[in-house]
Image 1 (tube, helix red, strand yellow):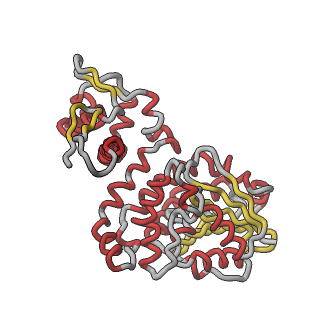
Image 2: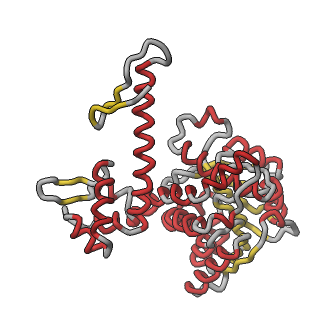
Image 3: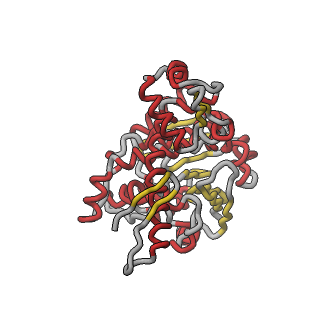
Length: 371
């Protein structure tokens, strides 16, 4: 069977006497072509973000490719081809008579750095990042095992950029108040640990906002710890420090009043041990804020999740495989609310509330207390 196209919107399937339903095949062919086009367009969105082209165009009137390239400081021929993808992808408007291009304000509101946590172009960067390890992932399908974290050199930067958008917009004024009385306790002075702190931006924001409290960030990545330490020094923070430490090594005595994790539990080789360790280092009456993926634990319940294909792909090609590379549980990105609540209960947290935060389309916010 061959597939032909008569125009940009129609796929024609030759009539046949036997085999699958022709209309069903045609419908799926159109769906599949849309997926393939969107996948390629995602690469161009990532490039538009990383080169600053969306930010540039948001501040310009309708302009030709030479004008866009000049303002962006980029090569015109590449910008012109990129604009071809953006125009046919219905992201940029094109006036064929004038030869100009324009990024509509409604599109800029979801594609520029000025959009903060609404900037979905940041997420597009996962596609080229994950594509780099596709050969290794294929071998894992054949032989098992995993791809180690060291094979994702850009992941730390991407996570720092993506999370910073949310932290800057919501951490102090929206997230902290989710824990009853936390703002007042932080103002008075308490001990706080962020487990799996990455580049440490959350810790540094909190340390800056609450100078009477003491903050430490733990991460097994020396690169992340170095980034957090450098940012703290640049801000002149004396109440924030960072340590290279495996989250699975956490144990008592209880020495923290607040422990946080931001999208790090599902990556762990031994997430159950990490949660138990977090419980053990909390003082009585202390709180644990676990920010992790908003999804259901059962696949069938995620069929209408707007980010489900993205989450399962990131899981397969990063979060799950990194855990398996360390002989871990391979919990995966989409471990889900039901399993998260059960694992928190087993770790000793019987009082858990689940919240969502406007501005964070990806995560649940679990607030747990140690009696």
